[in-house]
Length: 285
Image (cartoon, rainbow, N blue to C red; front, side, top):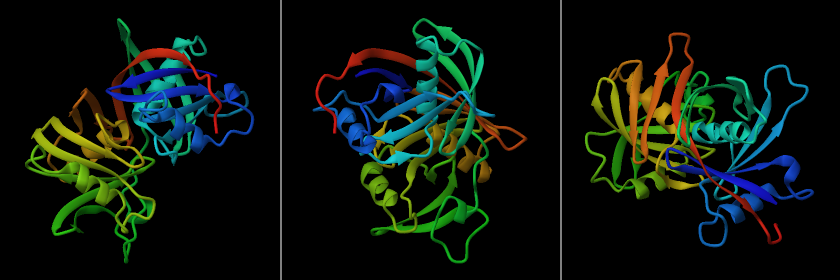
C-alpha cells in the first residue's frame, strides 16, 4: 500500500487514497498503527482522500484520523496536506478546489510555491460560539463562552471556547513558557464539561496583530502547530477584544495567518511540504 507524508507547519500527516486501502479495513486501527512513531511511519494523523464524481459542492472528500485512531471532524493543517497531495499527484490543477469534511465543505486556493513549499488559503467556515454547539455540558447553555472559570485540579483558568468544526478551548495567559501545558492540556481535553473531549490552546497576546500559541490536540497530544487551533486561538483573542480581525499566529514550527472576515468566515493561510512517498509492506489490522 502506497502513501505519502506531508507536513504543514510541523503538523505531519500520512495521506492515503481510499481506493488504495485493503478491503474493509478498520481505519481507526490502521491510523493507530501507521501513525505510531516507533512501530509505524509516524505522524500526527492519517488522511483518507477520495474523488467525488457526483457532488454539488465538493471535488474531493477527506477523512481525518488522529494518532490514537479517533476520527476528527476537521483539520486545518491536514486539509492543506490533502490539497497538496492532490496537487502533487496531478489530480488537481485548478487554482481553487473544495473538499468535503465531517465539518462541512471547505474551499481552498493555491496561492504560491516557494521551492518545495506550497502556500494555501483555506476558508475554515464560521466558528460556532454557543456552548451547546461546541459542544459543552453547561446548564443553562451560553450563547458565548467567554472567560468562563474552569477548575483544573487545584487551579482555576478562565477559558474561551468555540468550535471550528471541532471543539476548542483557549486559555489566554500572560506567560505560556513556564506553565506545564501538557499536563493541563491533557486534563482539559478530558474534562467532563467537554462531552466529546476538546483541543486546547495556550495563548499569549504579543500585539494587536500577533499571537504566540502552544497546542494540545485531542487524540494526539502536544503538536508543533494546529490549523483549527490557530483559528480558535485567534477567534478567542478577538472575542475578548485583545487583537484585530487579522493576526499572525506564531507556533513552534512557524507562522500561520488568520483572518476573521466581516462575513463571519475564518480564513487560514499557511505552508505545506511533501516529505516522502512510502510503501507499507506488512499486514494491516
